[in-house]
Image (cartoon, rainbow, N blue to C red; front, side, top):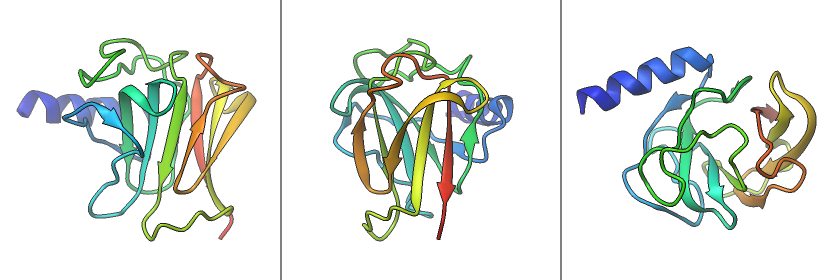
Length: 144
């Protein structure tokens, strides 16, 4: 448990994310598990259809400008693989269940929030098309 916590703190600090990393304990199925305290969760999945290993961020709006160095935890097909350029689907969960167009995450082709992107609106699952296995950064947005 201490190693997991230390890794989580180091990972969050390394990538400069405003989200706190939380390593899930079981294989992914369906929507991204949300953080109990905030009701917010963003996941990138190794496989299509929100399946296989996933990497989850939870907490307040933020992003990761470069996914390099992040690895899918041991929770399904793709575990141990790099997250960068290895995501096929994503999900973004917000508290309240609202599918709000003003709350969304963009997954970008290039680091630094550049290039083509896929948009995942709140409380939806998304097959990555423009960034399928070519994902290098992501950022959350709020127009509310």
